[in-house]
Amino acid sequence: MEPRRADQIAEELEGLIFSGAFGDGDRLDEIRLAERFGVSRTPIREAFARLALSGLVEAIPRRGVFVRQPGPVELMDMFEVMAEFESICGRLAAARISDTALDQLRAANTSCRAAVDAGDADGYYRENERFHHIIYRQSGNAFLEGETARLHRRLKPFRRVQLQVRGRLAQSMAEHEAIVQALTDAAPDRAAALLRDHVAVQGEKFHHLIASLKPAAE
Amino acid sequence: MEPRRADQIAEELEGLIFSGAFGDGDRLDEIRLAERFGVSRTPIREAFARLALSGLVEAIPRRGVFVRQPGPVELMDMFEVMAEFESICGRLAAARISDTALDQLRAANTSCRAAVDAGDADGYYRENERFHHIIYRQSGNAFLEGETARLHRRLKPFRRVQLQVRGRLAQSMAEHEAIVQALTDAAPDRAAALLRDHVAVQGEKFHHLIASLKPAAE
DNA sequence: GTCAAGGTTTTTGTATACAGAAACGGCGCG
DNA sequence: CGCGCCGTTTCTGTATACAAAAACCTTGAC
Image (cartoon, rainbow over all chains, first blue to last red; front, side, top):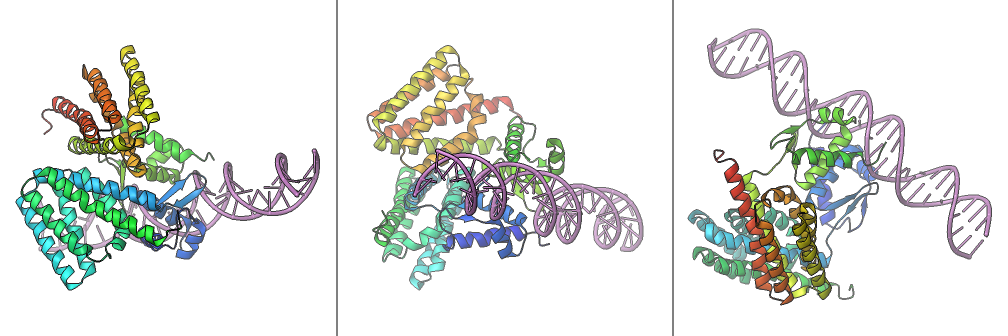
């Protein structure tokens, strides 16, 4: 049989969870999913293991696996941590960044601005991601880079929403340039502060958004 | 059959990896392990999934699972991140900590000192852990608490080594008291700086240790 | 009418069997 | 003598079958 069946299933399930087909606390039935995907229970269980690695589901022994989707509170917590992660990366990168990487940052920023001007949302996301990943890498700490990228990836589905606020993109671009400047000047504290605020703002915007979306929920 | 077989196997394998029976890059043979534990391959694979969650092994598709033990460089990176984690927890906790928790910190510190005086190493480790976990909790950020505890746990086997340096325990105790003072004074920056240094020192000690142990390795 | 106990059903966990891919070795060719 | 190709073997991935535990429902007693 196809060797990467379990991986594909994991991806599809990931999509289903992100799309909201499965909500927080929902139990994922092995048998139903096995029938649905036309495979046995084994690759389903394998897929569950993959999802558990990403933190999307949690397996409770003898009970089954349950969708673990962060609620508003946990999401705010995650954004707060994300801001600190980026801040640390920036602080370290300010001392360790190479000239080549600085050029790459400026290039990513230029592409980013071009995407904004062209109204190319996908392009913006892609270049924005590149920008941040360069900073992660330049922290010179592979473990930090990995953990930061991990959380970044996990928050990805929720980041899209809050960027639709008018004027945020232009402001974000300005912040990017200030960050590049701080890194160029090798100013660790400034870079750390700028990056923290840059991401923290995303969290706040997100908070306002969910607050306006469901005011009666809490 | 016993329902928690896979969990037990996972624990045993964890012990084997920590004890050095399996080194970095070693491939874990499903069949051999199945024979060794007297079970089929299925619970072994289940155990692998658990270990992968802890980051102790890495599964490469169609190749098998391999022990992923951090080398000196990665370990240093992890200690650096650990220091930043604790620092963040301290900064947030300084603003959010409760009087009850402050009392608990002082109590843990007292027990800690008693253990040091009694030469009770295990007691020291336990109370020291309690001390730090209280701070994680008091950050008021459940996600941060979880991630910090996770990394703390992962570094646990390597922490034991570096504490055997003479005089470190007493110094560590003094740092603990300074940290409690900073939290009592609600001084976020001071608490953050103290905690960062408190943990960073561990990383440095560790670095010196491995440097002295294998000078020809690099 | 409510609660508890027992049996039934559903579901997880494990064992075994099989298919397909990757690693290994021998053979032939240049 | 070195290199590449093909058959063999070993191992991962998947399917199916079975055991055991938890959830569910029914039934009986208080």
